[in-house]
Length: 113
Picture 1 (tube, rainbow, N blue to C red):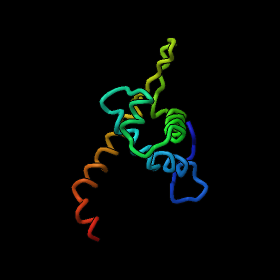
Picture 2 (picture 1 turned 60 degrees about the vertical axis):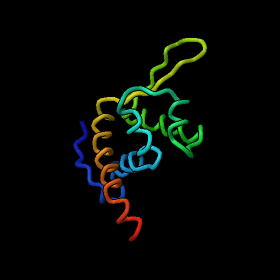
Picture 3 (picture 1 turned 135 degrees about the horizontal axis):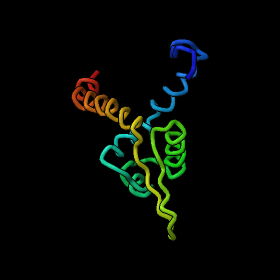
Picture 4 (picture 1 turned 120 degrees about the horizontal axis):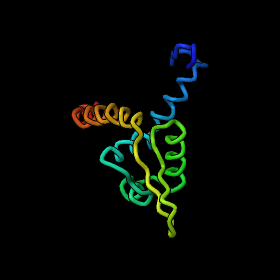
């Protein structure tokens, strides 16, 4: 356990990297799609318009590094892999869901600002 109190307002605080990872637009789109259960790479590509295979792969790897997403390789041929939220990822997905609801609720006002 670290004996350091995270303070994202301090420039060198490691918590800033976490904010960068979870605040990334692709992360904010991938995480909520996994709330209802595991998804395969191709399914995520279909659901997220505009994301490239490269960006999706990078995003999933970063989320996996931070224990937000778990990758499951079934060890089959042809290869079958899916991605699911970890308990930590699920807790973040709940917060992102609230943010999504706020955006939907306030979209018209924000659009006309």
